[in-house]
Length: 392
Image 1 (cartoon, one colour):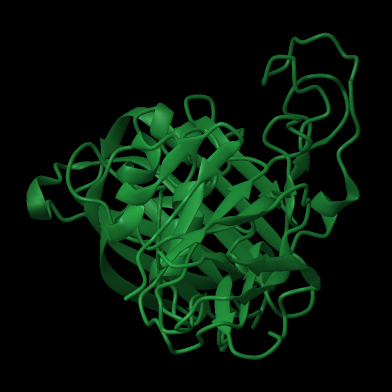
Image 2 (cartoon, one colour):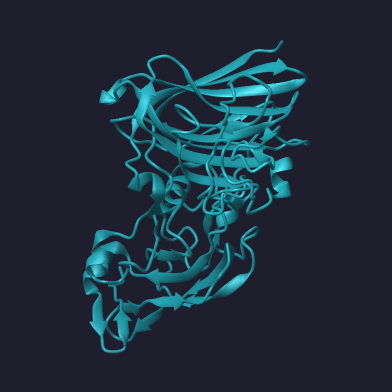
């Protein structure tokens, strides 16, 4: 039997999804542990959390967002059983039964108990199955025997060939967590490699970024989520158009520029007419869904390699919102913190490089705007929004 353990201190983060935030996703400090054993010819990897009580975090584990990724050959073992009483097997990724941790029966994740765990997000092999509950053949029926045996859907083949699975949710009231509590059970071929992208939370305390925990001998290489380069970027898809700001003669101001009508997870835009090129460049992204805004912003700011230009990513700033420029329209603001490093060049984005994926979310609009310190120059005109900023 092989038994390994990896631990790291982590101030657990707030919800990665709007659903978790709306449900009161809590925050706390935790020690995360990974324990691997070999059973029935399979690696069984448990993720455990202990609330260490630092920073007034209390004693509970209430919510989690965990993505499990297999990078070597093979697939995760999933318990295929009838969980809704319709006579047809389901993919038991939430551990109904309940399935037991540290057993090779299948891959699953929950806090407390499967029947009391509230689901915020399920993404399987990149497919967002949260609404459809595709892992269950009768998603509208009871989750125990006794429901009408009339399955309304078929479990997709991806649940028999899982290489990536995200499960996020919460257990109202939490469970005692002063000693290690298991919340995820991954079953993979012996010697398999991969990683977890994980955050957990309790009742009180401060939030912090997700962390990546590897298993096997995998080395996680992160590709950029956003970039600003002097030459055409690689790995950012194809051109989506031009962001050519418009200098106004004689007053040192610019007008903003937009690219509308997109529907792509990746692309790059040519950036030009900032004069001098060392002027701060600021960009806004509009996404097809705001559900993962907080997680994407967090990853851009904290994951090594995700943001080589050094953008400061944030929700649209208050000064933008009060000007009516971003309220209800934009999801992510990116401020160039190293003006002149790339200057006029190419702004790129690739949501496919967000660790754990974003479940089909795409970019729909891009805008270049003035630097935040000059947003007081923004005015509303009869033909739309006009943004101006003073050159340095």
